[in-house]
Length: 268
Length: 287
Ligand SMILES: Nc1ncnc2c1ncn2[C@@H]1O[C@H](COP(=O)(O)OP(=O)(O)OP(=O)(O)O)[C@@H](O)[C@H]1O
Ligand SMILES: Nc1ncnc2c1ncn2[C@@H]1O[C@H](COP(=O)(O)OP(=O)(O)OP(=O)(O)O)[C@@H](O)[C@H]1O
Ligand SMILES: [Mg+2]
Ligand SMILES: [Mg+2]
Image 1 (cartoon, each protein chain N blue to C red):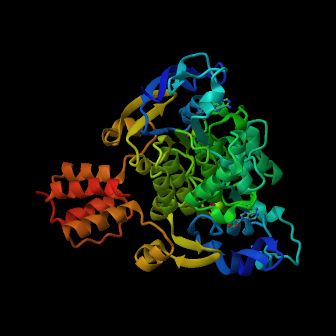
Image 2 (image 1 turned 45 degrees about the vertical axis):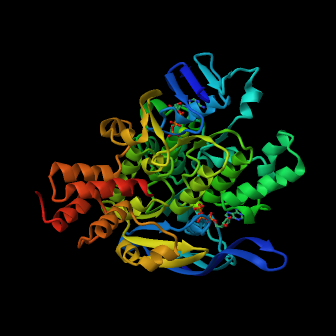
Image 3 (image 1 turned 90 degrees about the horizontal axis):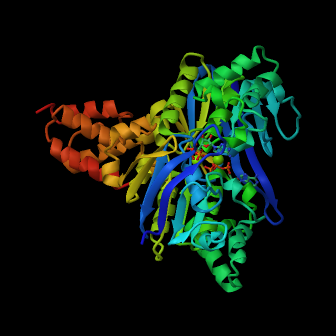
């Protein structure tokens, strides 16, 4: 059974315009799915609907087999966590420690376990030395790291990252995402980003355009869809562009060059 | 004309035991605005980038040392009128939400020009919005009902509308889709080259550095650990690794090919076309 199932989901903030239009897909347990698309294409709206922060009667969402509704929302929130696009919208505590603890207190987790998790997840995101600081007084990248830790600490099966690493330095992004991928419990991850390089970490890519899905494919195929990507305001990877040039001009040793270019796309 | 810092240190907080907790330490720096540089500032999370640029227009006052902006002195000892400085040195915050506050998108962008007593404010605002790809249908929406990337665009327009001499952007491409990012960079390069504006641009994106920078500053734990051209930076492996930087992707790709195929390649190419031409040359052309 798919851990996430979305059927014919449609959403409008105002009568004028659809933010999402007839969106359907399934995600299996343990999958890492990237969602990309132009500004205003509906990515954040989808994220908020999946975890019940927005609701609609048009279409249905099943999380782990449970249909999302007013009656099931508390149960569903135990299974799904979202890191917001703007970390400031997420902070509730006056210290980093408080902030990570907040979600745990709400779940009646005992004090020892809580301390353990605070330490564990603050360390994973590299913020263990900042536990007593006010999250308001952190740098942009530090805020994002704390927001990630607070959501990880809840140990939900499903994690949604809405441009959650956009202000972290490139090596930092790698450290944090590797740490998340190596958590021993099997996580299902939805990773919203504008950076195609980052989608190569995942298994699959969904492209939204004006609220509709225009591509949903395994990552290896998806990144080759130059026209669809370009039409959705994305830029093909440099490696793809070079492969195209090398082949078009029939360069010497083009097979070898192409092989190295593919490897270099994935090794980052 | 210049912005210059002499012996500037800055602390947000004091510890009872150890005194001020400096996040910038003893910085000497001159930005000569006659040179029309496109300056990128890079460095890891928390290294002090956002703090540094807020000293450039008096949003923060140095704890010690002196900031001189177009011959006006900002220091802890001296009060200066900041409005004139801010009119000439505009800054877009790292989080666009910090900047937006009006009822509608258009009013928000008109605020700066109005505040600085400029003429023709509505047209200025509309032109600025159009230049960042915000269409008319959003002009009368609340800025808070926009998507993240749309908000970012409006915040950028807010500074462009006042047309300051120096434009500072704190990670402005975060949240923009790649097309929006490319258009913004083209726009800023034009402002830099055609209108002679000095651009100061904080980023983690090495592609921005590769494309646009004429001068690069690297911050490391409150110190300027590098100040030079992108070529000087990327050709110096020690500086790159000491500062945990990554290379722009074309350089990384060429480096890979050079090593794996054992070719004689100049890897320091900053865009796909130049990289391809170098590859063609090194491989002895077409089959
Ligand atoms: N609170 C709101 N009220 C009204 N319209 C909204 C609201 N939030 C978003 N919208 C609109 O809904 C559409 C989809 O927005 P959404 O935030 O889902 O886009 P996104 O894909 O996340 O974009 P970005 O890449 O800029 O973050 C946009 O046209 C946006 O203007
Ligand atoms: N308002 C504040 N109060 C106290 N400390 C602060 C405040 N703002 C920033 N700091 C601290 O100052 C240091 C430098 O922060 P700054 O925001 O300048 O970093 P940055 O280089 O911009 O980082 P990032 O890339 O993550 O945005 C950080 O350690 C941060 O925690
Ligand atoms: Mg969004
Ligand atoms: Mg910053």
